[in-house]
Each structure stands twice: as structure tokens, then as C-alpha cells.
Image (cartoon, rainbow, N blue to C red; front, side):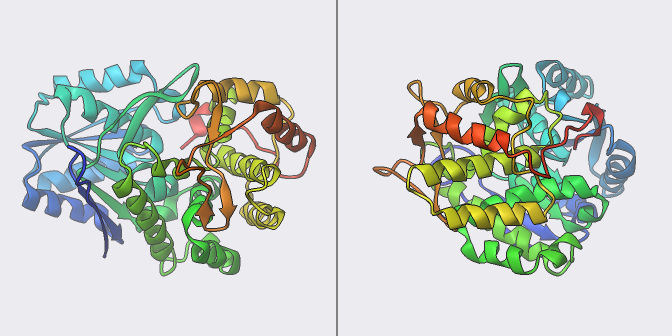
Length: 385
């Protein structure tokens, strides 16, 4: 088993440890019994995972003598709302939750974001544990303590920072991820390579066949590399005052695309397009060589991810949503931009680079006109993970 610590010395948030290995789901109950994190554990999952994984984990908890309950909500990004948050809160209150309770987020990014937000605000904060079952969760969303829900004006506009007490990455869950959602998760892996790890990016270029086969010898190493990158950044900047902005590469444009698609575009697909757009913006500003964008485009294409903007979405719409994003400052959109594969730009120490809308709009229009194979497909709401 691989352990990656996150120690946040400069905040009141608790530190946590990421554990990566096989069969960690069942062993979670053993660890929690030793830690005595809470009197009561409430497993929260979505409707797709309730029966196959939620009930199995609940039975394991109870066999270990832990007081445990299980609740679920409808699967999909459409559940990241105030209404569903209220329903979860009502559910845990009905189960007798108190300050001595802990939540267990079993699922992908939607589950982790929602459950983390409930944990952050219920009784002014209770512990929670992340058990990601998607690749996006394993390498990104379950790590770092960002929690929240969506608003019709934009993604994750309502939320809080609340570090999980622990993250258990069971790589056995990879086997059950649909191919398209696995590819979506790989967008976040590629992002890690671009922002901080040239060797990881090169590994993906040279051993992509093994990655796509979900090789259980290689994938823990890939996941560990991503976790260590995010852990380092989060320890340096827990609340995104500066350095943590690098994790937003591809997300300024990507989140706008997700919002405009009505969340029918898979997260990783939107981020893939966003990374190409922001790499091209970096090209135009003289920060990033065109060859780097070519390598990035080639790798994302091999993963089956889109690299052009759907014709139904215009540059002006994208920028209007991006202006409402949490990353916008003083009327300008701030982007995380690469300078080379493995390193990000900063200007006077600031990793959020303000770019004029005219320049960004020109790049977005060019990408919209590409009409290349791989244009983003839109998922039915009930099918999203």
C-alpha cells in the first residue's frame, strides 16, 4: 500500500493521509475502528453505487462493530444542487447525526463534492472520509478539501474548503469504470503532467497502451504521481491564494463549457478542450511553445478526448460564464498557463495570468472552427459519473 501524507500546518484544517492500493475498501472499516474517528459513520453514495458498493461497505462496517448507516441520492452532476444538499442534511439528521458523526463519501467527484460540503457545514464541521470510485476522484477531486455545489450561473460557485480526514484510493474500482469515463479521468492525469511532472507526461506518451488496459501494476504509480503533485501544491497553498491556481489549468474554459452544456459534457472532455484552449492562449502570449500544444493535442486525441469546441457554443458565451468564475479578478479572467511541459507560468509571483478577452475569443473561435474528429459528445444527464 502507498501512503501520501498531506500536512496543513498553516491552517485549522486537519491533515490527512492518502492511501493507495488494492482491496482498500473492505479494509477501511479496520482502520476507522482503530482511529475512532467518530461514534457513527454515515456512508453517502449515489443511486448507481448504492447496491453494488454501498451496501457491501455498510455490511463490512457493521461486521467490524461500527455503528453505520447508508443513504444515497440520484447519480449525476445534476444533483450538485442546494435541493439535494438539503435532502442529504435531512437524511443524516433523521439518522441521528451529531458532532460525533462522520460521513463517508463513496463515489466520484459529484459525491465527494456534495458530501464534503455537507460535512463542512453540518454542526459547523464534522469529519468525513473520501473513498473515490472514479479515476477523476482518485487523482483530483477527492484530494485537497475543495467542496461545493453548482449554481445555474456556474460550476462550484457555492462551497467551502474542508479537508477529509483520510482518502482511500482502491484501484480495484478502476475495473468497473466505463471506458468513456475512464478517458475523462485521464484528462486530469494529463493535466498533472503538464503542470508539474514532465516524466509523468512522457510516461503517458510512451506507455499509453498499458494505461488504457488499466494495468494494475502501472496505474497505482500513475495515481501516486498525481496524488503527490496535488499534495505538494495543497500543502503549500491550502486555500488557493496563489500556487494552487496551477491546478486550474484547463478548468477556466472547461468549467464554462460544462455549464453551457447543461452538464451533459463529461468533466474530463470539457477539461481536455479547456487545456488545449489555454495552451493556445499561452502560445499567443509567448509563454508556451507551439510544440508543447502539439504534444498535448496528440496525447488527448490518443485518449479519445475532444480537442475542439462544439459548434453550438460560441466564444462570447464561454467568456461570459468564465467572467462569473471564482478565478476572475477585477473584471479580467485569470488563467493558469504553462511555460513548458512540467512547469507553469507566474508573473511577479502570481500564478493567475490575466488575459484580454479579445485574445482569448480569437483562440476559442479558431478551435470552434476546427470541426475535427473528436468534437465533444454530450452525455444524457442520468449517465454521467
